[in-house]
Image 1 (spheres, rainbow, N blue to C red):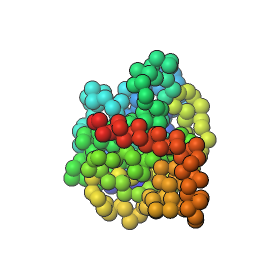
Image 2 (tube, rainbow, N blue to C red; image 1 turned 45 degrees about the vertical axis):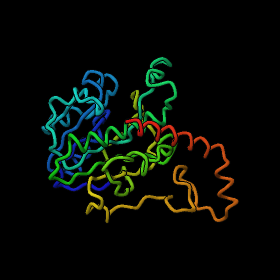
Image 3 (cartoon, rainbow, N blue to C red; image 1 turned 60 degrees about the horizontal axis):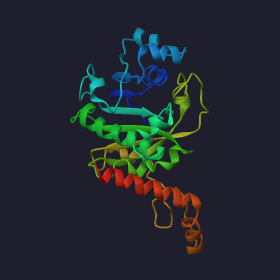
Length: 263
C-alpha cells in the first residue's frame, strides 16, 4: 500500500481501529479520520483489545455507526475533505437468518451483495468524501483467496461509471505493525493472507498509476473473471470454459451485469 504524508485520509469500516492507529502511528498522514460500522459500545464489547483510546489520545477524529451505504450515518463527517478513502478487507458480515439474506432479493448471491457493497463504497467515496481538488484516490485492500478473488475487483466494480481503475500494489502488513486483521463478526484474528490494495480515481491516468502494478489476467489467452491462464492451447482454453468453476463465475458475472444495468 502506498501512503504519503501529505494526504488527508479517511478509513472506512475499521473494526477495532487497529489499522487506523497503525496508519497514524507509522505513516503520519497530514490528517486522518477513522470510521467504524459498529457503535462504540458494540465495538468495545466485540473487540476487547482495540485502539480507541490510543486514537483519542492523539486527537484523531473518530466516527462510529458509520455505514458507507447510508448517508444518514455520515452526519458529523465533513464532506469532500479527503485525498484518499481506504476500505480494508471488506466483507459482508454473516446473515443472522435465511430470511434476512432473502430480504436482499430472491436471486441475489452473496457474491453480488459483496460486489454491490464495494461498488457503493466507490461511488459514495468519489461523490461525497473526496475533495474534487485533491488527490481523488480510493483504495480497497482485498485477498487473493475465496471469496474475495471471485469478485472480479479490477473490472466489475466501476463498470458503467466515470471511475477508472489505476492498478494495485502488494499490501505488506509488516508496514503496519499494530494492525490486527480481525474476523468481521467476532474477536478473533484471521490468517494474515497476503493482500493487494486496489486503486481507483476519477482521472483516467492518475500520477500514482506509475507506481502501481497493472491489472492481471487481462490478455486474450486468459480468463479474466476466473483469474486463470494464460492458456497455451485452444484445448486448454476450451476445457477451462467447460469447467464447473468457470460456469459458476459466468453466472456471477451475468447476475452482476443484470444488477448494475438495472441501476
